[in-house]
Length: 181
Ligand SMILES: [Cu+2]
Image (cartoon, rainbow, N blue to C red; front, top):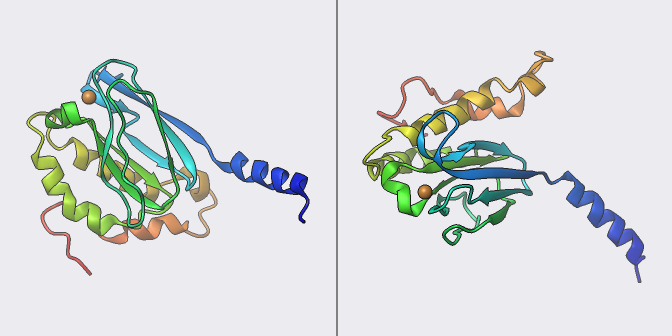
């Protein structure tokens, strides 16, 4: 028999690493954008939890793209909803009642392991939006930008953080052709 106390201590240590993040569901964002998740772009570590808050009413959240092996998620309308994200990669979610207004958000967990899938789904996901067009693409660009100049690790400047490798595939030319490897 193992020492149960030790097990408890180890569990506590493991869960201490996981951070909690909150995303508000809003009719109007801080920047006056209508129907937004805030923050709409999140970068978190594997095992972190994201809680969606029904700050204003009439919203919920449903994943549209998750990394391979990750579970899709969906909340009820006006529900406070938490999801723990273990699998690395980019997650894209929408607010179903406002998907036509492009109420979307992205979460990158660890490394962006599934950018090929993201890039190939992006046009279709954008197409459903009747207003706020291009918002999702902008968020994805923001993700790439963040990983390129992550100040926390980059300050040392001696060696590029591993995160930089994912952005190497020319973000400049944008969406016309995602020259697959
Ligand atoms: Cu909504």
